[in-house]
Amino acid sequence: MNTRENTLAAIRYQSPAFVPLFDGTVWDAVQLGGNYKAENWTDDWGTVWQMTEGDMVPVDVTHPLEDLSRLDHYQRPDPWHLTWTEDDQRHFESLDREQMLIGGLHVKFLAERLACLMGLDNFLLSMYEEPERLQELINFIVEYNTVCIRRLVDLGIDTLHISEDLGMQHSLMMSPEMFRQFLLPAYERMFDEPLQRGVLIDFHTCGHVQEIVPDLAAVGVSILNPVQATANDQQVIKAAVMGKTALLGGINSTIVLDGTPDEVRAEVVRAFSILKDRGGWLAGPDQVVPGAPEDNLKALWDTCRELAPY
Image 1 (cartoon, helix red, strand yellow):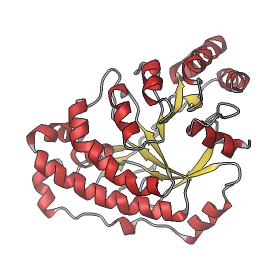
Image 2: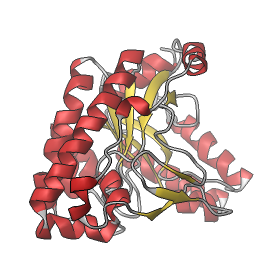
Image 3: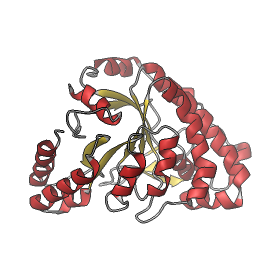
Image 4: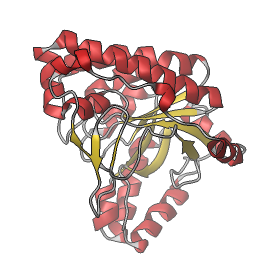
């Protein structure tokens, strides 16, 4: 198997030859212009973003729908305003589809988009205080995202990558019941077309999410990442998704950043002992690790390669 074939076999629980390593060789991704920028800017939704020195991602600082009464007069963005240029197409066609999966990236998907539009506290409170207005906004975001997803799928992507942080360190940001009432039906609507067209859904959510992992598997999530080691019981998650949803990540990034090489090796062994079984895992840190010591990165990937073969 080449890398692409082996990665697909792992995701589908179809006897991969080795655990794929999420080290930059598994997939590449493109996005529609204007969906996300790592800079100071105002997006089409009216959210103002600021990025200070040392930040990895911009922070939303102005929320155009802090008060949902503004929804009546809100200028709703056009998903066709996002760009796809000739240069984008040339870049897309230059990607190595023989060896890698090619994804379409859609950042700030639904819960994240609501938090950016309303502010996180206002979004969470609206589930109780203004459920009908919140549902109206969710319906529009679903319509918008559906167009964006179709545009990406029409390009011929293999995977749809979405960002949707739902967890804190020890719990979900909302109750599982509220998640199932407001978000899960929307995911099912948005995932229907890409799944029918053979596109894999890669769902990113940091934090504690183990109570809703079976729900995500039930609506067709193909890959769940990053399976944060310090926030979840990874054995519970592995058992819940076995044969249904692949996992990506799971190696404690704090140890990669701050531990010793021996501690990194021990952490990799721990993750492999839980997550390698019967496929369904792409190995990597559970967060990005900028500035990690070179000796730790070497220990990470060397140990992964030693343990990867089935």
